[in-house]
Image 1: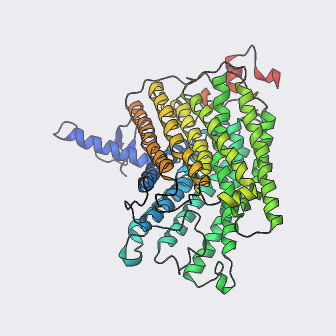
Image 2: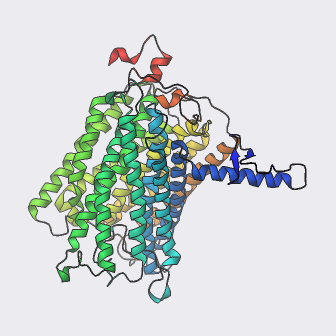
Image 3: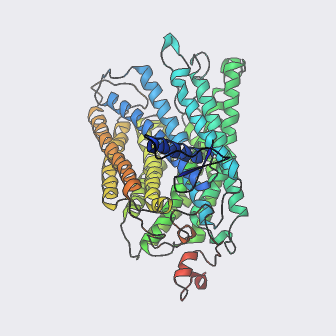
Length: 575
């Protein structure tokens, strides 16, 4: 690359290169191309944690659109009985790619991206501990995602059909053995997710090193923002469970390519072994996705309630408790797999137990709002929406922890409704709230409030129409992952309502995308601290300079920016 940016989009020659002649015809267009290429180069080679965070979020939102299209096609297939809009094979591939994309290529990168952007700013650090490793992690994630989607054209299936993976996002054995999964589609799933997982692990290492070694003077562990605490736990969980999934993937690859028999019962292997290994990763993965959303809510609710967070030490303790308990609940996904009554009872009890620290958080958020001067700006709307949807999803989770109840409803649409309430209602509403809250810090201007409220209400109505009826169709016995159904089962109305909710969700997301584009093009500067917030990221400029702070800040309490604004009544007097 022969040009370097000047910081204002203009390009200057490096190493004695020629300067574009702006006087000749077409010179402006050529200059624009040079400028565009210089900007692309800057973003491609960047090691700035803020830019990498934005790249993570942008990539995750790109995959979110793809996953949304896949979900829409599935709902269209199920809108009426005996529909032939999609073939069974296509339907299998769609739900596999949708689930895989939402978990590995949307949830994790968006959450890790926001953490990448915010954590160094919140702890008063100038950068992440390992900037180049940080960039390496992002490109690993992106390459893994593209490798997975390359299977659409790179792995011919039976009869020459296109063959993305089709065994579900959990890839149960023996469905993934050579006998049942011909071609290379499953191999693309294994390799794509494995590479992407290495990216997540490098980010986790970086977060742990950054938080423990680069906090500004005075920021003790018990003065850190709760979002930073959540990200420590998320990083530890990633480092604890992601290697287990990677090991299982290697074993599966050996089974498929080298004649090993880890998961083949006919050769003294065990299909259940895959389930144990996968869900040891899979259930903590739920908390890897939801804990950052907990962190977003824990930062948003106090600011818009004009109160300090209620029960900070309890919130920290609950977060750490969730970390440990979540490692011991995986087998509640296997109540119908034939485990012993003792193991079923043990894992049911551990599942009930994890609801205790989760409940503490919910009561503390409500306690923070209680008596506060609440401002229902868009971030707060999404925070309250998160609370309502997550509580509902959590209660249906408690129902599924009851073993006899789970035996009746396992693998029905009730489960689909439950985990969408938890993961989409929880994670996605948390992400949307975070986007509205921290967008001014990233780009210097606020998203439009009116469009934001339209996004919230339309998406909330669409979400409820789509996923609430699934609990009823599941109670009526509708199995998940079925391609079509007969008209006499009583499921028609609920599937019709679920499908009606989809265009509303699309409309909500479209308004958000338009809001972002419009604000990036014509947004008005809003100042460095538009929400009158208290944490350190709002103490620097918006957007922050390359090294975050012109002077390293000093922290004297859990609300360092409050202390600066109100020296007559600093928080340190109350801690």
